[in-house]
Length: 115
Image 1 (cartoon, one colour):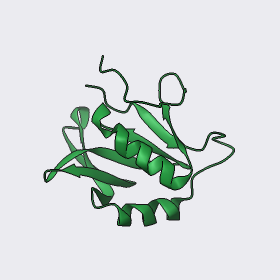
Image 2 (cartoon, one colour):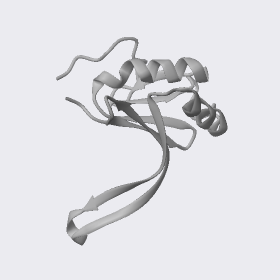
Image 3 (cartoon, one colour):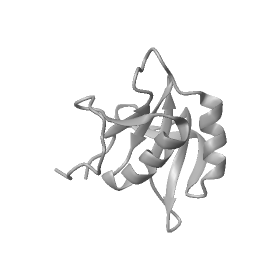
């Protein structure tokens, strides 16, 4: 299983960026997504947890969080398993964007192989 495998953004990113208000409006229309504005992150060397501000959404299936879509400087980072790819495509299509592989930078047109 892979995490943090893709980003959603326009083809000409960073010259063209997604509109954050469109992203927030889209979250409200997709019942599988739940908007979040912060995450609790464990920092081992500090010996505790901190709350980090994010602009994103959780992908929920069967009442549990599968992964996250996190807004970052005009793009949306996909953080979770490859099973999130269909929702990533749906989000990209709705926002006039595409899904790109984080490692290669190439557009993803199908679910990546689980390595």
